[in-house]
Amino acid sequence: MNILLLDDDPLMLRVLSAQLRSLGLDSPLLCERGEDALALLAGAEPIELVFCDLQMPEMDGVEFVRNLVKLSRAPALVFVSGEDERVLQSVQRLARAHRLDVLGTLHKPVSQAMLRDVLESHHSFARDITLTDMKPVYSTEDLRRGMASGELVNHYQPKVALETGRVDGVETLVRWQHPRDGLVYPDRFISVAEESDLIDRLTSVVLAGALSQARRWRDDGIELNVAVNVSMGNLASLDFPDMVSEAIAAAGIPATCLVLEVTESRLMSDVRMPLDILTRLRLKRVDLSIDDFGMGFSSLSQLRDLPFNELKVDRGFVHGSATDPSLQALVQNSLRLAGQLGMRTVAEGIEDRADWNFLAAAGCDLGQGYFISKPMPGEAMADWMDKWHSRALELGLESR
Amino acid sequence: MKRVFDMSVLIEYVGNDILIRRRLLADYLQATSGTHAELRAAISGGDYGLVAAIAHKLKSSSRLVGALPLADLCADLEAVGLAGNVAGFASRLEPFETTLDATRSEISAALQNSLPA
Image 1 (cartoon, rainbow over the protein chains, first blue to last red):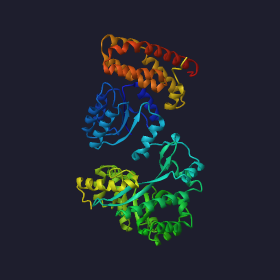
Image 2 (cartoon, one colour):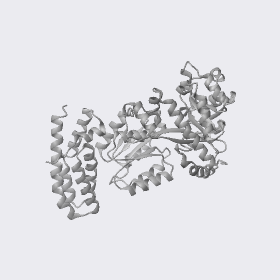
Image 3 (spheres, chains in turn green, orange):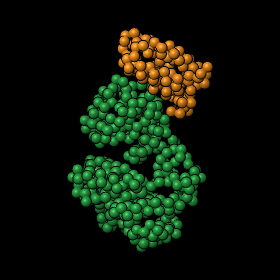
Image 4 (cartoon, chains in turn purple, green):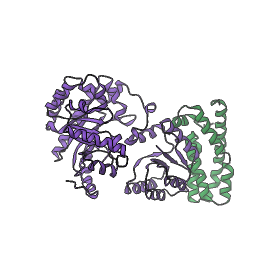
């Protein structure tokens, strides 16, 4: 990944450079002047991410962003700001109006923790960098306390029909509103739960939250399917199907509104295939989705024997598939395989219009990704759906 | 006497790597070696925008290395430069220069004593 750093202070450039290196992002391009940065951005080498100080005395930040949007390949931006919030706000408005992806705003100097959080918040970087060394290590007790204090919150990312733009459902993504570290993403605590006895309780909390949110949406006239991720630990528990049934009954919604997602690679790497548990869940009319498909090397014969009725193509194969023939072949093969098995298909990681167009033309049923929406709290969904309806019309989709 | 340099700030930003910290502090000393002359030339030449630019750049560097009293004086000087407040320079230049000298001395001492090459 190519990264450009723009700051009039060479020392700041050196520090940011060292911090990025410690996060596994090497050799950024360094610029002290806006015009040099623009020349590099307009060059042949694509640059994906720019950290820019937009309040340098000798550079007009608004003008810089205006020039950025004229480029054929606009990078994602992180604003490194000074004190003048008005300048920052006008630059952010301009960036939003031109659909520039603004990852966040940092105040100088930038701490490693802030930098890590901004990078982690952008999901396309999650697969490119290893942040293990930087992450705080949470103990089982931390997580137990957080769960007992109600610090786990659900966010929801919409899934949309690619042919019509209709909002079909959501994937539930758990976050930890940590009192010290702010919003913590699941990759930093799910493994703690999985390696302890907390995974059943965590899944139960997330499931109950998602189903009661689905109930509230229904009460407001919004019918959405909700997907919840489950771990292999859950599927090893004989009580799990009954726990799911009870949660559905408590929320008072049809079982057909629930989708349980299981990651393909974990499923395939576990010799104790929980076929009986999966079958019992399907008999209860809960949908089962095989997540991150393509990373676990399932064969047609393996998939045929499992009771899944949805296949989610891994994001790593989706973004960029419009222009990459090898990704196109992988996506088309996955969709063909799912079609042969009568499964519904979902493409994860739709990040731009080209991804959408390719997946829609390839016959994928549903799409999910930052081009459609980032995950959001449940109460924001109704407003988002109104806005999505207008945007889908603007994009030439028949949202209905 | 009030401390003008706090190493823990730089550790917070770049971690405990002594080589990186040495390099950054050496860069800071080099970057500030001509600041007195540059600033005085900009003031006497009436180039208040340049005064603001010098102060702006030094402000962020100073915050970064933990020279926080100097960073505050830079912020003040930057505001005066941006406002073109000629009278404001006279009262601010001496404390600025004194603090800059003290900061540079402490950083040099830290490089020699606590951050061996």
